[in-house]
Length: 309
Image 1: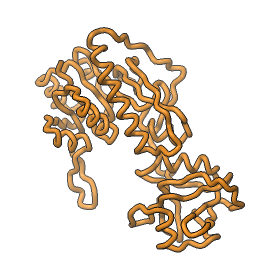
Image 2: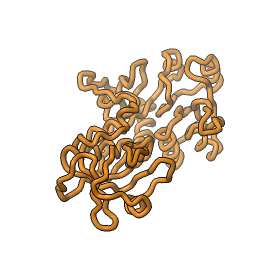
Image 3: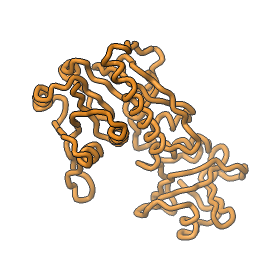
Image 4: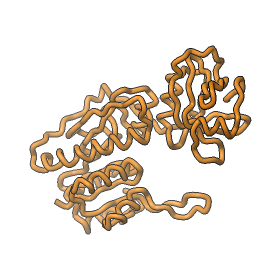
């Protein structure tokens, strides 16, 4: 069967990479058009386009689901199935109805939990210990379609948005390889979601990136890893922005006020919170590359008693 992959972002790129390494047969890729990015605002391809080009795949870039060229492309390619992940657009009913076997979506959560745009970040931010990936039939709702398969993934203590995304993509690719042939053969019957159990993963808002040190160490730690490595949770040190990319909850209960630093030994930097303390492990000062807390200590020489805000 003619199967086209649709995706644009990093999760889709990871998925496509794993599918190709698994030998899953795809006839082409649909992704979003190149967009201006960087200081020079030069057109930048999506991660999916860059990867597909490396594999010599045919890449199509219609403006979006309402672009007449999109339906013209489907008329030309005649896909029996569209496989969608992190595409960046909600598909119209006309497109959803076009493939003879529908459109399947790989969503990085255990639907109906964390429907929406930021399921990986929200799961981490909420301190989830288990999340997962779901293969579903797309409909015109937001992640509301019937489920074909669903698998759990353990969220480990050291996971951040990058490591968890890669684990979910790998599990999702394996799910596609196993489940899609069964679905096409009629051996999987999609089952409706339990809508009453639905929760939503709204996009990350800019105010959520700012660390409020009055919160607990655990909550701030989850915020940091949910936003690491990009866009990064931030605070201010000596009136300049600094991203906090990695932390751990300090074992010793130091009597520190929220946001106050304590230099312990030569290489350990601890900051107080509203409940407990955090050890900083990786930071990124404004205009600099990410660095270990030890390198930050040696280069910037913060003093015990200085504050983050």
